[in-house]
View 1: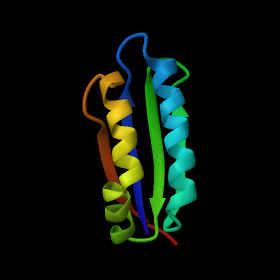
View 2 (view 1 turned 180 degrees about the vertical axis):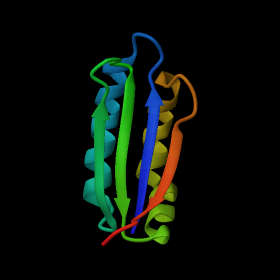
View 3 (view 1 turned 90 degrees about the vertical axis):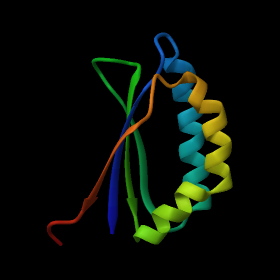
Length: 97
């Protein structure tokens, strides 16, 4: 199993608009990607323009399929103009069962 943690920031004042798009993205991923086990969006309590995705995939191949999915590409086109810069992404493997 692969765990992915991704943080991204909205441009100032664009947090609510970005949140709407990200929620739609979550719904699309959950519906279309059975090998994506967890795809959860979080929003910072301190900074409403900061978002975190917590994701778990059955395998590296499942994550690769996620990255290449047409529905994700469509969301990137809508999302990217609202984002302050590239997402900070970390990859983790389970250290315990």
